[in-house]
Length: 96
Image 1 (cartoon, rainbow, N blue to C red):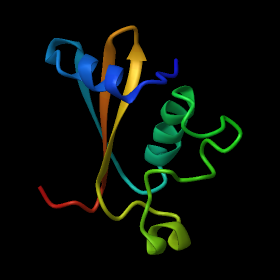
Image 2: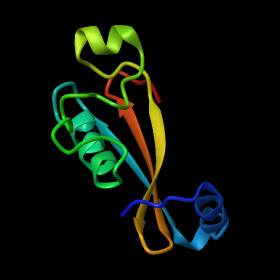
Image 3: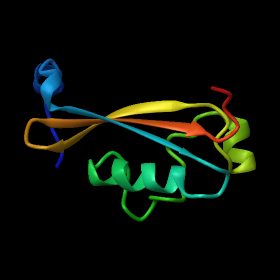
Image 4: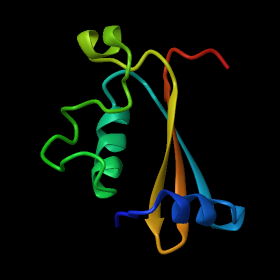
């Protein structure tokens, strides 16, 4: 589902009861970026044909070249009417 109004999206996000936080932490080549691309395409941000190929969350040039996630990134996605997912992707080499 695509929300057309940024103001409406901001207003809906103020109600924290409707926000779900999801963290994806996995080893290299276990589908973190593919999963994120599929969720992003379901919001209409990227084409479903590009999901898994575009690597939307891997914004650094070296991540794109090497094809691996090296830096954590996050995105807020509309899930259902009034509900949001805050999706965080972490590389497996992250020291916690």
